[in-house]
Length: 166
Image (cartoon, rainbow, N blue to C red):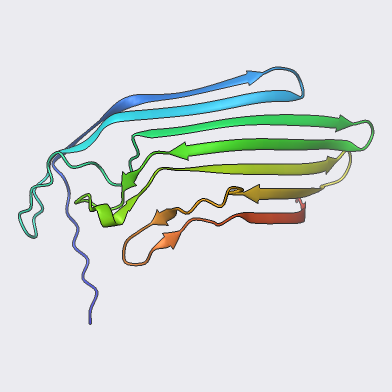
C-alpha cells in the first residue's frame, strides 16, 4: 500500500453572505456578545476534477455551513481585596455541512449546537489563577473532520485546574 496525494484546484468559487458581531457592556460586571454568519451562496463556480473529469460546478464548498451563530453572557464579580471571579456561558450553533468536495451525504455533518460554561478566579496579587469549565454540556454528537481518519468532537467534558502566568 502507498499513500497518494493529489492536489486539485477549483477555477472559481462564489461565497457571499453576512458576518456580524455585536457586544454590549451593560455594566463593569455584565456583558453580552453575539456573532452571526449567514452564507446563502458558498459553492464552486467552475470546477472540473483533473483526475477523473467529474464536474463539481455548483457543489457546496466543504466545511461551510449556511448558518453559524454564537451568544454569550459574561459576568465579573470583584471580591474586595481578594481578586475577582468570572463566569461565561455561551451557546454556539452550526447548520449542516459537507466534509467532502463531492457533497456525499454519508460524509456530512448535521446541524448541532454546543453549550459551554467557563468559571475562573484570579487573586488581587499573584500570578496564579484557578478555573473550571464544562464544554458540550448537552453532549452533542458532532465531528471536526471526516476523511481518512475521522475526528469526533468533544463529548461533554469538564476541567478543573490551577495555572501560573510567567
